[in-house]
Image 1 (cartoon, rainbow, N blue to C red):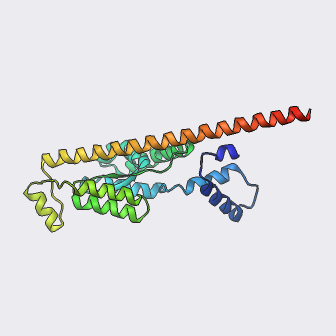
Image 2 (image 1 turned 180 degrees about the vertical axis):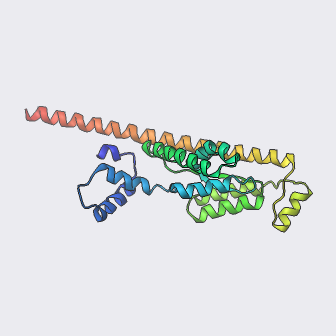
Image 3 (image 1 turned 90 degrees about the vertical axis):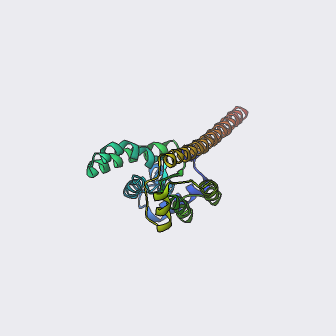
Length: 227
């Protein structure tokens, strides 16, 4: 059980064990502990994830999403674009649960990233709201804010009027291209951050296996001395 829980943080495990002590009426099991550890990993439940995905499907809106929501939305988007909202929801929920199960099985922490829309004001508002909800750390919020406001995008007259009045307007092709560049930059940063996390998990597992090997060797030596 200790080996299976080694990839999780001590505080996560302690919180899950406290919940088990208060909630379980039967035998303590690994499944019960893992269920509570995973439920506290910050990933939204399927219905909340679907609501975020729907908001992200609006090309003007900006939403902060998890990796699993973005992947599941990609699977459901063709059905959603075809106008079958019920079918799209079913496809999304199925894909989302698979992605979440895989991420939790591999011990990946939740990762939130901005999916930018055309409305510049909404992009900044989405990042700040995610910061208030604890989905983005303060340094990440500042990084996004600086990136989104450092170089204002020149839009055509209709889009500028839309920003002034608060009403969205379709940007010019140049603006669309610039937004795609921003999106690619965000995704690249996200991929780099994910790689660092994966490397960290691999190093912790390697250290755990090394310590486990040393302990087994020490036990064998102790047995030989006693014999």
